[in-house]
Image 1 (cartoon, rainbow, N blue to C red):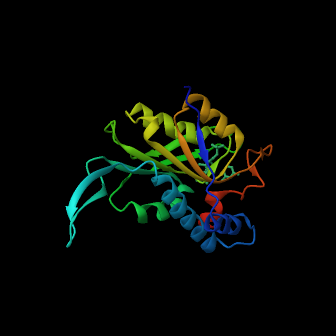
Image 2: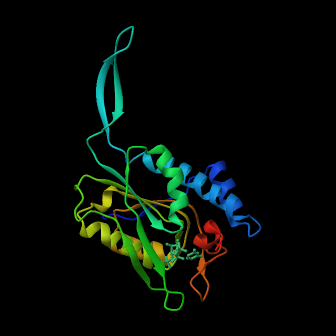
Length: 216
Ligand code: PRP
Ligand code: URA
């Protein structure tokens, strides 16, 4: 059976609440950042369901033997925040993944051409092929940035089946690009908006996530 990109929009009131707060242009930076952190937390919680490897064991409770399931500590787990806006999402994610390594990736879009370029890459030259990778990027718009992030990971030996992307607003151009090149990927997003405007912003979206998160 052919693989197809999986995009989940968790129907959770907390996700809807913090999405609503982040969309409101009247929300100040400090609250916008909190909204991103909360969305990072709940989207990560959802994404972990079918992503974190577990070990089946048996322990003795005070009363009897009992089968249990623990997170497998031997499989590396990493978080990749796409700077700048992904930092606030990562703050929520890392609370749930305290042992994960964090590899920062700084990408910025050219405002005219909308092409992404990389100004910081803290990834190692090679990842263990079993590595589970959580990418945090709130906006998937033209898809240039997320495709560049995926390229950097794949070049370093990451299996796309073990990648989860969390985003706040995803748009069709980004989802189409990801689905064409990485059909085994899974994305968790708070919503999918229909269009981009002529400056590459998602509409209705939430504006410039990096500027809003950092008050610039
Ligand atoms: C924003 C956003 C994404 C990217 C998405 O970053 O955080 O990374 O745009 O756009 P794309 O899908 O068209 O590539 P931006 O370049 O504005 O940098 P910033 O986070 O530092 O503001
Ligand atoms: N980047 C943003 O921050 N917002 C958008 O709407 C699109 C790209």
